[in-house]
Length: 83
Image (cartoon, rainbow, N blue to C red; front, side, top):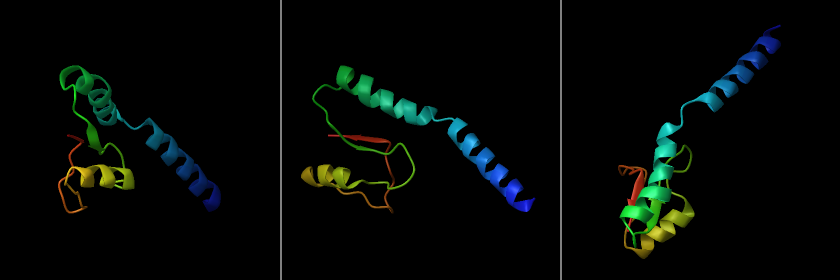
């Protein structure tokens, strides 16, 4: 009985997580895909933080290093960084 209840709770928690509002992530994506090309031509997106997990990917570290920047977990994380 306890095992069934825990399994049901886990399933419901996963469903709730999938339904959680991701509008902030959508806004960041729209900025990158729509706003930047239209209003900031020539700028390159070198960093995006729109999710959980690793805050700075290896590819982003490389792009940041090319322009002389670095981000660590102790830094304030911008949503989008353009160069």
